[in-house]
Image (tube, rainbow, N blue to C red; front, top):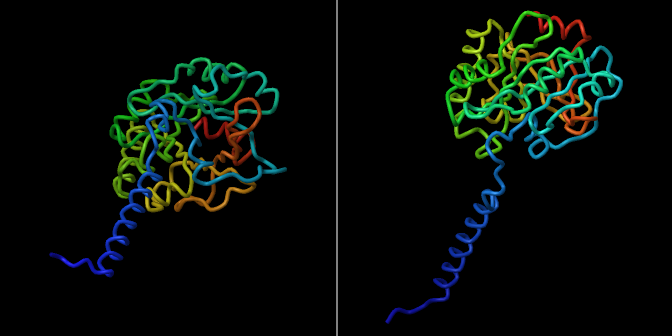
Length: 271
């Protein structure tokens, strides 16, 4: 008959406690139910900024910066005259996500901003775990993400940030993520003749690309940072072209500063 020694009992209890802690940690790191994951297509610029980076104050009295907004189906029909009269001069509108979603409000938002006098462009919410970069660039261009040299159309923007549907980096290594982004940018340029804007947050860029510095020479940076200052930028960029500084601004929530006067916005549109 085996003898139960006190030391063996203590060891078993410690092992059991460790296993319970491991299970608890897994539960805390995993959504508690499918209800915690938003439906596909509902992603929008900056939705991961506050949960991951938090928010502080807003910029005050910065000269030579031009106010802009970004919108998606999240905002529905937008009161463009209200925004124009408040001083907003440019806008980006979500056109697509992955290869499976088109913004049902795109027409009202894209054409409505143009009709009140704004310079506007379209953006694509990237989902690198669902299709390749080139395929998503084609889908974007085919569904509203193109460009024309009319002086009122900004180059398309790639929204690459935290995955709202799963793992932050979409299950990709840093090198695989850089390859995916490069494929998207190369295909967008091949289709439109323009270098796409990259929208991201510095902390995500560090985590998911290894702080890759190779896009800064040609792709304008649109940085997400809800604070009184832009702060550290991703490697490769000496300055930001645009800055999303809040998600709680007037009328539509997401407000941005273009790093320059209106003539610089026009120059980006003209290419």
